[in-house]
Length: 229
Image (cartoon, rainbow, N blue to C red; front, side, top):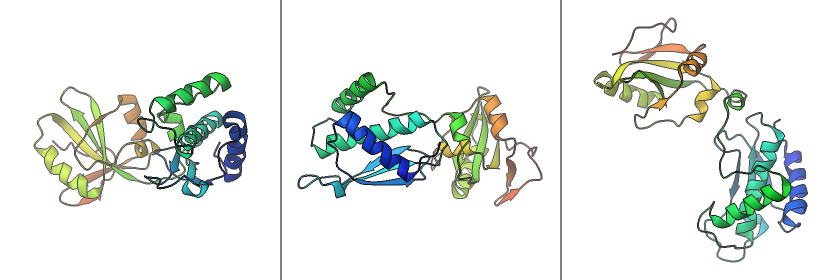
């Protein structure tokens, strides 16, 4: 499901009573389109006085189609942050011992599966409602493994020059792909290689367009352009 603002408000009130004894304040809640974080809690870096409800904004993303329990666990995760900050409970970091103690207690008492972080699954990533073509460099490393680098056109031009003389790279291609799987990769400013399984690579490049770089980028006629070695 993709949560609506009404759903998040209703679930916030429900879990506030069930889990937090109704002690959390009514704060701003919004729906975001983030793909990197399911939820977030914005607040001042430093509180010069007692925190107020207006200091906080809780966001939940509806960009991906997620299971209802994942959305609820994300919401409770952010509510734990709110509880710790609003009541000025000391902790060593954002997900320090106090956060983990509360998280584990809620999981145990209420049968939840709240975690510190959660990796996006391939099936979920495929539901991304924002389709944005990305330049992807696909490299074959010296050991035979495949790796991808997602980058901007400016970085791709710089990386192409580096790859020409990199003895660790057997061959490489540049593609333009709108597959949502690449949204989860960081936009590289330094040449970094992220290994990817051959079957996954073949799937995500099925509808990609091969790009030729000869000082300028141009779309090739198909996916079978010559190797850049």
